[in-house]
Length: 283
Image (cartoon, rainbow, N blue to C red; front, side, top):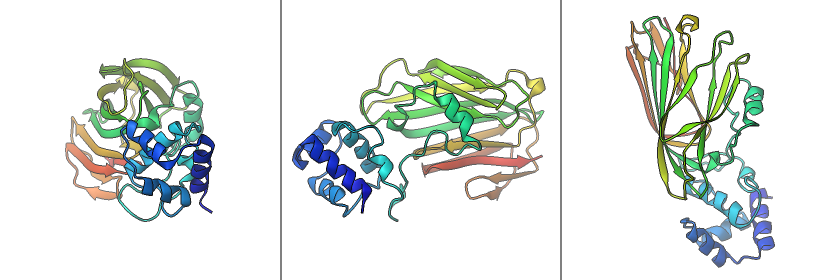
């Protein structure tokens, strides 16, 4: 039995909406789904799999007045079709080596809008000093709201070195620092970047922030940089610059493939699925 189809059918019945009215409600939110598609979803003959269909499910949950995730969490593993294949979104603690400190930190922050922010572009600029320590990390996000309401972006940072101060967070463009949770003993920092206004459906925003090590004397040697993707991202650009000599060997995390060492490493990708990208290196 298809749990998603059964839950959707039950929600539609409880809400008392015909498929035509449901299609009209979706259209009012700027989402185009045919009656035939809605019919196959509720009978289990097909299921939402593409990115636009998964976004439509988020709107269906709102229109049908069911809790967020009530439908999307039932999608499970999609069938083998299309480049955007994915399960229902992983929790925000996914892809971290120890999920418990992240989950503890996120309890004090508002993360309700994270799934409603479409990742258009993620751009990271990392500088490794001549002393082989990480100097700074600047990040630029281009985000689009899939529904009315998003007003913040949540950043999670983890360090493997627990005996040094956590970096300072600086808001650079179209955002300001909200709540900040620091767990120096476990090397975690979680912070809200507030947009300053609530985004309406279809609106986009470009934000930038920076992490800067506060005490370079305590900074350990850098051996890797990782970006964790919980949700699909249309474009990813990583520029990693070594101010001194390049490392002796470099491996690109996507595919675990060796690349030629250089003072500037680039990782450029389109339609990035959930997972981890970046580089690791040896001196």
